[in-house]
Length: 428
Ligand code: SF4
Image (cartoon, rainbow, N blue to C red; front, side, top):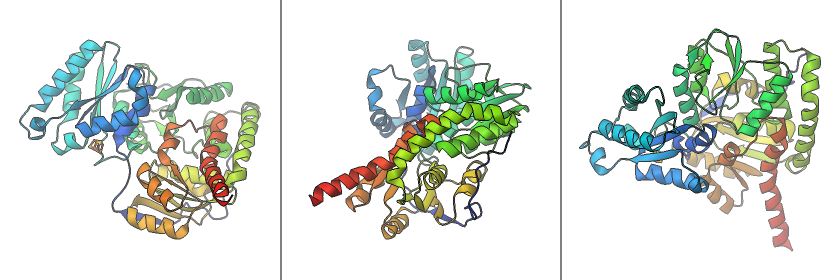
């Protein structure tokens, strides 16, 4: 096929110096991922082994799910557990036994570690192994950590998916695996574009339901849909699978480049690629252009939060006419975001990790038109007259691929329009 690689800027950020920060950080913990993972995996249950704080976090973050049959819960550790006076392993066995007896619909159970379970060193991998043996073949029990000591909020998904990779079946078949938990409707769009190009044998990790046919092996190639899946990428490579490097599918350009990398891998010809992508590309461009009227010429400052920052900065600067002042990310996985970094024109500070006070000082000095940050920083910044966008919304809202490209741009345009209207009202 013809080369669909985006034209890089004269000087990109691929070799730009990275400001490494190792101070206080303001980010949710990895338990937050359960909120979108439990919707995706319809026969899974997430049992957090944690404290009342963990239970409150989940309940308030997932408040809207209160009327649904829950697919997550917290095995609350009481003071006796924390003091090491109770046998935690026995408690977990009892709790899991009760849960599975009540809920035969559960086919996969994740024991999710938290700060308290880690502090007192409960071995959840031992528990998962033992419980898998007890409840196999109906239920598979896995474990991962969502603790705030170890994980920021999108790392919860990474840890969860990485925990699934070692138990995937082995296959020697040539196949494509898409990796990342996207809303079903968005995932279906990607699958239908790939099917229209004639790419068959496509699997998705995580599958919507536990599937014993999900497999990996030396002839598996995989494309990652979220930039925070570093451990999952490494786990798949350990299984012999090969990563297809590409910019992330945000916006017209990112989606086209992501699809083109897969199309090249599978030998799709240029005519077929154009036939499949021309119409949705045109729709995406039109929708982006509408929001870009507000964004053009505005500056953006990313606090490190979701790990989506680098691909989003690439989208906002190249497709919406914005200027990035600082692009902060909790972790910089070059293998994953390298193609996006190379497309981001030099200029912004690229920072990794956080020292929140120092970064707030930089934001105050830069006075960006919009700051993308966690909930904890948004209110103080708004109070200082800076417009903000909650980073967590970018994870909860469908933003990938062509049909969502306009919505993605609009997510940034809305707060700017609101502030302009408020300013107009105040002046009237
Ligand atoms: S895992 Fe840690 S950071 Fe997350 S809610 Fe529980 S105690 Fe808080």
